[in-house]
Image 1 (cartoon, one colour):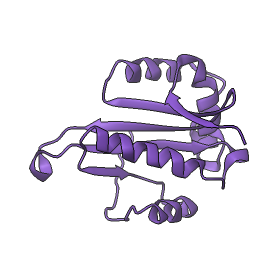
Image 2: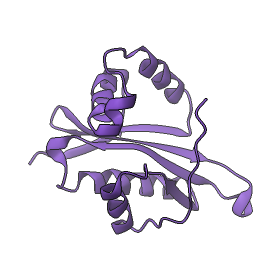
Image 3: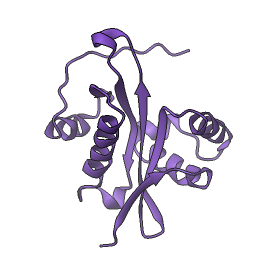
Length: 150
């Protein structure tokens, strides 16, 4: 199996990232791979913010996974900085071979490098397989999340 590289995403990676985001029942309902303009606009906002890390996992010349890490400075917890992991996706042909673990480990390692005291993530309530995956990696389901669509 070819070596895996985790690197910052580029604008050229956006079509593949969007395809990864859309490749599951939830993503198929909320993503629009046929119109990349909102994703490109979002990419430029992310690229201009040093606290945002949109990453891709590449095997050979093919993007096979993605994750976003956000560094959040704060006052609570004695001025703790935390990180938030979002948008973790692994290509369907790569699932089950440790790629998701590698992406999360990259995010945790980068969080330590950024001197974060806490790493957090959310997962849709329906993604029970993902919940088991995150718990195996040491995450605990400690909070209830809320959303307000705007």
